[in-house]
Image (cartoon, rainbow, N blue to C red):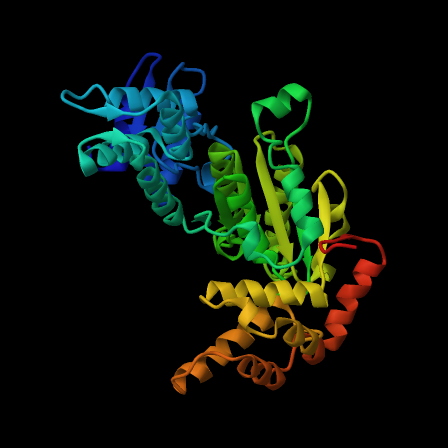
Length: 426
């Protein structure tokens, strides 16, 4: 029956207690006429023993029906359910399966966060890809999951490409992370350790907050999900909060994972001009951070600490709050060496110590840019990169510590007041 109004009239004419299933009916109830007819029907069915069940992906009642409906959201499949899906797929005749028990577990773990239908499709595609189910298909499943998560428009799946060696300096922060590297396993639970909750990375722009977040996933061997706070906001009333809940629920389904909330202050950037939506979204994230039970390690980064409310920064939300300051001379040497190696150059062929001394007040991002600018010059002149090229590039730059001296000073005073721990060695 294609006419939703006719379907509702048919239900009203039925007698006796029953359960009426309306598949994908949510596609019609945004129509005011359908919503009104449906609301009248629900009121007429009270006490008759008849109930309506609307089934559909994303079927959430509109405001007009919110008081009449009880939303029931089914969770994403867990490891046991995905194991059943894999077993079902592997029943296909003539299928070759070359997986150890450990590899099978990793394959199922890679599919966490997918629906049963998505997992079945991905497993089948992996088999068709090379006519055998083996260890190579773990990467294929992860890639498929990355595309599915990206299509949500809110969460981004980042491959664990960076390592601790890609981050210059920040030795105190690195030591803290290594100490908790094994704290997510079963052995840690038996020892009585709770799973780490997360860290806040506050500091000057360009000092490595985003790079550190990407590094944690690689260091711990966990998937890294980036929550795009700006993509949460919608013009529809209540839609922004629901998007936030959906994203956080997906992160829990994939756990253990690292959830990177980049530039957290953006959740409050709309101020009072959005009818309180930004505050409700922020409250949703805040409540989840406090109450979650899944092992989702939160890495929240922020540049403007003045926009963050005090309740966010208290203990319990985060295990530690780190401040990323302008790099010291030793850290500047490490950063320059890292970026030279990334570009296929041997740091020992350059006067790195002299460059670091000349780059007082430069951020890590500015040092990286100086090397890139210098390479453009040497490449244009068809010769090899030299120390003087980098030195000249540094002299041309106006570092953030000069162009935004007042803002940088305020951030550094925040550290001196004892509100955070230095991410660098004391």
